[in-house]
Image (cartoon, rainbow, N blue to C red):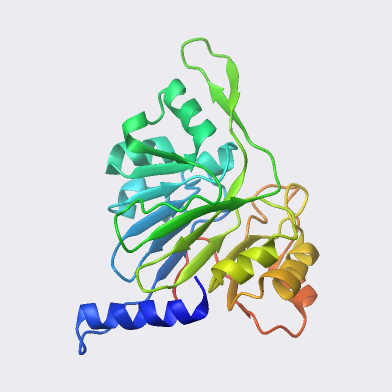
Length: 271
């Protein structure tokens, strides 16, 4: 959302809540890898890539899915296990809608993870309002791969299912605050389009390397393409190939106008 429209949206939110009512901040909680819980100023809860119970970086006290409370929406960026994570169990526990690329959604239904009626199958550049008016989600490009490995309990064998195309998400909240979750990706020139068209306030970017951007590539994306107001590094340190570190990211960024927020797994921050 362009900056002028964000300011208008914020003003409208204040008016709707009442002149004396404080506008709540957006809260972001990180569980390690690319798993985030977003709680909007209006109280809606969105989980992205909820890889929690088997995540080696998620603190033990946060592995109980019941502690997450209510979840309104689950977004899945692509079909790898460290991103699908606990989607099926969370969907059953909470009744949350599951939004994902159309082909991966069909695979989810075929496997029996999530029923079609609980899913929102969509594709890139087609904005949706999965929770009614106020929150808009747009799927955007990511440079990666996507395949579902399914351990079939009936046969004991691993089966492969289509994961569709990998993606990132633009999440525009009720007060205009806009988050770009990049998913697993390398640098691509259309990140400049994401900056110009969606003007994200906060970017969640992988820095681990090997399968995604490393710290130097991620720094280039921030400084030259996205130029978001803030960035949270993610998808590093979870498995041995993901060697990139926040320290390397900060060094590569140099003197930047973007605020860098380094979180520890389990941390929650307000924006």
